[in-house]
Amino acid sequence: MKAIDIRNKYLNFFEKHGHKVIPSSPLIPENDPSVLFTTAGMQPLVPYLMGEKHPEGTRLVDYQKCLRTNDIDEVGDNRHLTYFEMLGNWSLGDYFKEESIKMSYEFLTQELGIDPDKLSVTCFAGDEEVPRDTASAEIWKKMGIPEDRIYFFGKDNNWWIAGEEGPCGPDTEMFLDTGKPACSEHCDPSCDCGKYVEIWNNVFMEFYKTKDGGITKLKQRNVDTGLGLERMAMLLQGKKTPFEIELFAPIMDELAKLQKVDSIESRRIVTEHLRASIMIVADGGRPSNIDRGYILRRLIRRMTRHLNKLQVDLGELANLIELDIETLKEMYPYLVEKKDVIKQVIIEEKDKFVKTLDHGEKEFEKMINKAKQENKTVIDGYTMFKLYETYGFPPEITSDLAKEKGFTVDASEFDKLFKEHQEKSRLGSGQKFKGGLGEQNEQTIKYHTATHLLHKALQIVLGEHATQNGSNITVERLRFDFNHPQKMTPEEIKKVEDIVNEQIKRDLPVTCEEMTLEEARKSGAIGLFENKYGDKVKVYTIGDFSKEICGGPHVTHTGELGHFKIKKEESSSAGVRRIKAILE
Image 1 (cartoon, rainbow, N blue to C red):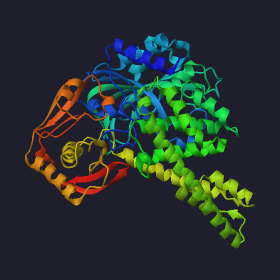
Image 2 (image 1 turned 60 degrees about the vertical axis):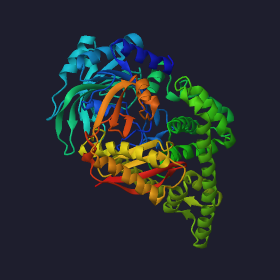
Image 3 (image 1 turned 120 degrees about the vertical axis):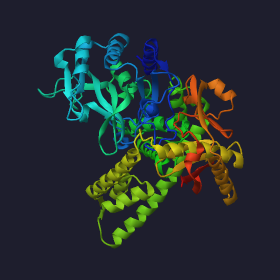
Image 4 (image 1 turned 120 degrees about the horizontal axis):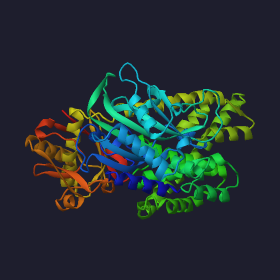
């Protein structure tokens, strides 16, 4: 069964069970400071899990484009992906455990034809804060899962939360027995030996974890589910790795034809990173030295390095992009119309990296000459790491060049420095996440409202082309990216500030209406990321000044915002400017 067929079966099944199909949100989150990319299906729905009313009702189903960056260095093995698609169905204060589990079991066994005898499930074992989830276990027994295939685990396995704060709860997970022999008499779904593969996760989200680590009850009981599409396609097609399914196989096969040096690892890296880069660029991402732009840069550079390793002519990259878009267009038709910009961005970044490699080789020569003068025969790990960190120069190339010059390398020291670098990166990523997907406090709500005023003010001062390109909100400040070809003058910045503060001084009412997307367009509402909207949308109107399609939440009157001050205006990427501002 192809991935597109699994996705369609999923959406149709839950639509028949009263769910409204909502479109995928973009990979680049709107007004969410907690992550660089959309990492889970629940992320765009946090306000509704917290109790805000969703325009489409209380039962939703979608597929969500996701990208997780923690495993970039693991891609190349037989299972890790950065970009993937998550199927999800949602109950926002509607049904709970029994109906959720029944629908999951029916979909797996009847729609996908999975043998019930191959299914095992896990439930939350309970702790001092939340009791053992015997209710889910009993429901699974009613479905026909025997007691010896129902397991109980603690919070490390059967509790879900995004970040350190936010909506959370116990979950029940479904596992497929692959038929591999048990690794020991204690082999169970918590084991990583490969016998059991997780295929679905139903989170019973009725709690909220606070900043101080306490657990409180949410306003409503929700169900939040996630089913990884690529993994399910792999299992149903009887493949050993996701790289053998139809979403990856054409590029894998083409690389096998083009390569002069065989490396399954390099082919997987190129194939995976190419798809991820295409999806990021299509949703507005551009390479840069910070945040998500740096992730995109890293993906493209790693892909380029492994094309070199395969000794594939880099001129073939344009053809590989064309082939990948052709492969993916059934899943994502909009890629076709964005093909030219995708090719331009990826190839330009590849060309820059080729120059980077040239610079790195020159620096390497300097370091080799210095080492010779000092009668050294070993390139130390610090030198290797400096070449990697400063020039993006791959350590394996450093090692190869050193060998040609009669030198050895201290790989152990490099590995130590690299692990420290990874740990810092992960901690940084954790800090990004620290804001919490559920962090909707009084201050972030004020900043969210202020972005609407800023957006309109920019269009008044600079022109209608100055549309939003992205935003990032924390309790300390707002960051707003917008389309504009040149640096703003001090006079323009002052004018924008004055307009925003004038609207705050007017204490304009902020109102919300639900309407169809067509009605919203006709009403003059600004629509950002329109491909993410469903049939009904929320339109927030700020007095006679601003009208935007937005998920909310917002303050009730602009007078609550205080004084608006632009702290910085700078370039974000080509043709995109960035404003950082505060409310005093």
